[in-house]
Each structure stands twice: as structure tokens, then as C-alpha cells.
Length: 369
Ligand code: AOF
Ligand code: ZN
Image (cartoon, rainbow, N blue to C red; front, top):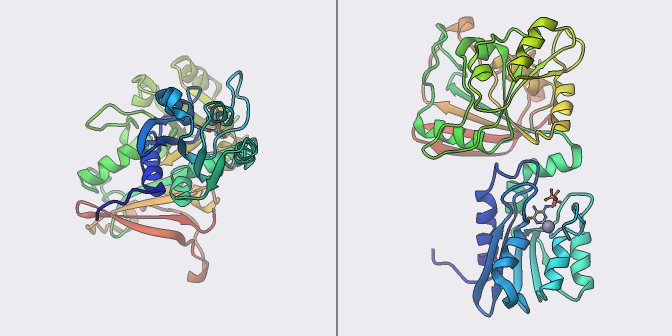
């Protein structure tokens, strides 16, 4: 299909730049900006790192004096609040004498929330809001939750056989899904602040929980749910120094083990007084630590507990076209008490399906979130 040059064309360009930065802005949104004057792009920019330039500022720097009279396409409402000593993007756009601003989505941050648009309009700039808003919203779903709740956005991911098993009855699990699915999963790791597993998975596999792709990528903080501090001191996540390691436990955990883990550089977080980690409390504490998004790659127990507690925002289920059987001995992707009636089942909303080689991924948002 040939492309038509219009507002959506430039907004899509801005959205693509924003999308490319997914995973590297921490709890900040991903934002892109394209500045156009007399039929020519004169500036482009994205927000690339928390604490560094916003998209508009980067694009304005490129446009320089030419920005006067130009149109700016921004994927998120320009900010209107002072951040430390940095003036708001609104002021920068006004100062640069931009004539028109096209915004995809309003910024849900209560410090902005429409005031950016108002400020621009008050300065005589023509502003429109809503072009490709859904696309902008979707790429900031983690930010949108965190900025309002201070709780991490949790994406649960599984790789299972068609009969829902994450290993054979012997425990063998290498590999269930194919290389294309595994690359997609490693990309998801790059895009999240934390990756979370249960102690069962850690003891069974001694996983590295790092991001391994053809090109260097970001490693999320490794979060292990371990009520009784059973994690071995020689576990790879303790010794390899590849990323932050956070162990969620309870105040009842063994104090000596706690000290040895801390001495090895592990961060210990108490989530309740036992016997089990209080997962709701855990999410609150991780949010306080500015972990804005978590990829949950738990075993069946942790997946089931998080799901049943309503703590899962999004689910990506990767299915390999295989049947492994094995009855009780073969671990399931979800273990939880369950419901008596099919009508009560947790259902996925806004479900979509993607194909990765021979595997399919079912992606949706659980109804009990
Ligand atoms: C924009 N353009 O590119 C971004 C915006 O941590 P700070 O100081 O960068 O401020 C973060 C807040 O600024 C964030 O919560 C959101 O409201 C806004 N992000 N705004 O105009 C950008 N990244
Ligand atoms: Zn800004």
C-alpha cells in the first residue's frame, strides 16, 4: 500500500521512534516528536532515558531557529510542569514559536493531565489531540498504570505445550518453544524493569535471567520470590553480577542467610511476616523501588498465585504445537485453586494472536486485573 502524506504519516514516524525506546526509559513514558515545516522534516527526537531530554527538546534542538511557524507532532501531551530545574516542554515549544502541535494522547500524569494542552492553547498555538491515540496508549500501558498507582505493570509470560505443560514429567524443558518465540521473549525481557520467578524455578534450572539477543540488550532486575531464603549462595543470579538481584522474602527468614546474601550484593525485601511472601505487598514495595514493569516468568505456583491474586495486567502465552502428557508429574503453567463454574473463569480481554515460527502466542488482559 502506498503511503499518503498527512498528519498521520508524521505521527506514525514519531510513534515508531517512541516504540524503539521501549524498555530504556525506566518508569518514564516512551515519547517521540517530529517537527515539520513547509513540507520538510526539520527535527526528530525521542525520549531515550529517564533524567535526560524529553522528545520535544531533542527534536527542537535539531530544528534550531527553523522551528518558528512549524508543526510539532508529539506522541504524548507535552509536559507543563517544572522537573528539577528543567523548564516544561510546553514552554520550550512556545519559546521556539511553534505554530501548531498535534498530540496523540493526553499524559495521564496528574501533574500534566490536560494542562499541557491548555498552556499551549493559551499561548495561541493550534493544538489537536487524539490522532493515533490508541497506538500511543498501547506503547505506554506500563507507564499509564505506574504513574497513577505506583504499582508495577505485570506481564505474565509462559512457554508451554498445547496441553499446557512447561516441562516433561522428567523435568526436561529445553526447549518447548522455538527460536523465534525465544527471541521474542528475550526482547520482552529488554522491555521490562524486572523479571520475576519463584524459588522452585530457580532451584530447578539455576537460570541467568538475563537478556540474550543477537545485539547487546538491557538486563532487567532479577526478582526471586523466596519465602524461606532457600536460594543457594552459588546460584548464578547471586554470583554473575550481570544485573541487580532482588529476593522477596518475609521477616521470618533466617537472619544468617539474609546477611550472607546481602554481603553477596543481593537486595532483600521483606513482604509480610510469613510464612509466605505477601504478593500484594511485594508489588507495592517493588513499586516504591521504582520497578515500573515486571515480566513474570514464574513456574506454575507463582503464575497461579499472582493470577489468582489479581496482580497480573497482561498475559502472553506462547504455545508450541506439541503434546507432552505426563499427568501430575508434568508441571502445568498455572496452578491455582480454580473455579467451580466455567462462567467464573478468568478470561482474556482484547485478545490477539501472533505466530512465531511454528508457535503461536495468545496475548490478552485478564478480566480479574
Ligand atoms: C514530555 N515529553 O518526552 C516525556 C514526558 O522524569 P522527568 O523529569 O523526565 O519527567 C517525567 C514526566 O514527564 C513523566 O511522568 C511524564 O509526565 C512526562 N514525560 N513528557 O513532554 C517527553 N518523556
Ligand atoms: Zn517534557
